[in-house]
Image (cartoon, rainbow, N blue to C red; front, side, top):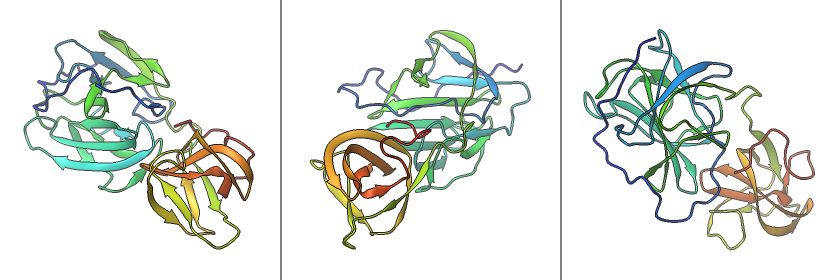
Length: 255
């Protein structure tokens, strides 16, 4: 197996978040279902909590989104720092970075779910061999990486087997139904106390990336405290969305 080491991105990061964290997305290993990769952490990495992933002959292997979100950076820093990298915004201050890529498979503004190929393993930027440099951040500061809620190994090398996309995209589709033809308000968080950031038309189909609890609302489908995230920072009350289920949708992660 080729062992690769970053020489360290130029970008600096604080290691400990300054404010309490909202519930994190369910992050998964950033490779297709059932693949096993060697993930290395080390105290002299930059930033410290990043994970470098390797496996034999991995140049050009697909890299997938580790959680649903919206792509907000697709760029090439040339022979410095991250080289070609992608950043995904998962809402509530959480982002992930995928660096040293050989190429891209997404564009800025694109919404992605579990298992979506976003790029390919490479050795661009300040890198000495093909690998994926992966980070999880909160409010811009790098945090210790977790997969399915479990902390990655710090410090050392561990084999991680992906369950990313093993059950499909882990998203669901719903239909907005306000009964009156009035559009449904989109909020910036899971509750009526959050800022209105837009609306979705009555009868429109929406993709549900995750669900969480929030303000209790009485709507077309009864009284519910469940809120559906239909985009980065976009939440609607499940009481107005037909999903075919009373309660949480099986297989869709909690936000």
